[in-house]
View (tube, helix red, strand yellow):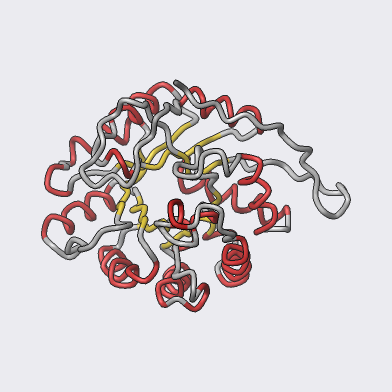
Length: 298
């Protein structure tokens, strides 16, 4: 079975009455593609009973007038990047970040992945009881290779656990992209120490933050424990703070399509509407698109 996300595209006009064209984003910076029978990692947090292919995703982008997409390494399949890479080879509108083993990633393999459309590595750290030592020899070597290729490290982790990880990454000199607003403690929001660390890192100029997955901000287990919870207030507050203190040059937008764990509750229309809500100025949204083009496609 292949899942087709089908919703009607809306007229793209600004809240100011349409005087300034409100174009769709140029780049969707966070999406996943997969086949139903892909192998799962030992710590997969869910299982998908459908496929969402590159062709499905590109048809969706075309429906909404979005030119490019960035495929995030899929947490539940771990180091199995094979399907994503095969599709990146076919579709030059797509780029990707891969989840890799630090002990088994040599320069030649990374260069081949780069030629196929990989532009960074993803550290999928959410739900981990114990984090690796990111100052270890194997990670130092991996991060140096990432730097040499001018890639970035794409981090998915709960905000309270983020500060020491971010400190190690900054020491290594890699570019850093933070998932889902930095995923702060939902009780603390903008006052979460992890979120404050993200702000400080972005202001230092080598860290970017994704405005994505706002519906996930009630916690990594909320898809089961509070599936219909309203995370909009948290996302709204974070977005306002990020636009004010970080600015469009350090922000990216992603749909998080096909909304794994929230299928049937979140739609692409919802994701686009939230982008307009989080960044109400169309000029700022356009600048965020330019930031994405420069980071992923230059």
